Structures are given as C-alpha cells and as structure tokens.
Length: 129
Image (cartoon, rainbow, N blue to C red; front, side, top):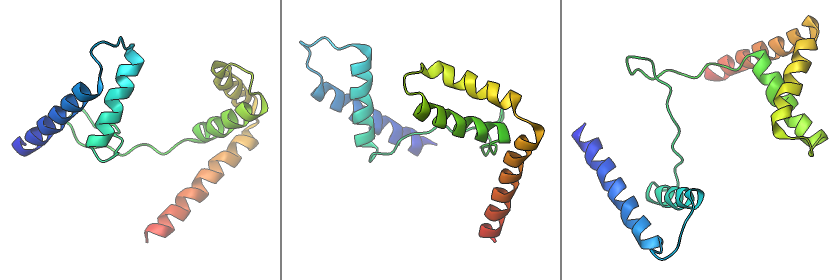
C-alpha cells in the first residue's frame, strides 16, 4: 500500500511540474484548456495510458461489467445508423428515436437481437476453451 502511495505521489509531482512548465502565467486559460493541458501531461507521464474506472462492489471487490442486453445492442447500432442517416439532427434526439423504435419493434424482431447475443456468447465460450 505504501509503495502505491509513493508511486501516486511521484506521478502527481511530475504532473504538477509538467503543468508549471507548460502554463504561461500571463495567459488566461479557460477550464477546458486547463483540463486538456493536464490530461496531456497525465497521459505523457503515464506512458499514454488512458485511465478507466473499475466497477467495484460496496466491499471494494472488482466486479466485471455486465454483458449488453438486446436493447443495448439495438440502441448502439441504431443510434449509429441514425447519425449517418440524419447528420443534421441534434444528438439528443437520436436516443429517443431509437428507444421509440425499440418500443414499436415486434417481439419477433427483438428475439433476433436476443438470439444474436446467445450466439456471440457461445462463440466466446468456445474461444475460451
């Protein structure tokens, strides 16, 4: 634990030093610019690794992500299609349009997505073995 704390302190110190070296004290930066500067320095000091949050339970154990549902897969693909079909539409509307389409989709069509998930899971199990 102490070693991790020391490593984190060292990285933080390097980031602060890099920030001080890059930022011009006479220039007024907005929040977005400052975040971008810090993010660039952070990635540089961590060998371009992007940090992702780990899901954990209340007791701190790591928890694997849930597999996407049929709805999640439909929404992801349909929103991407809508963006290509209607590039001038505000992004907020894509989700509601796709959700409305899912609601109006027949059970048979929804089952196609559920079957696709099962096939994908079976392939993944076969690859693990």
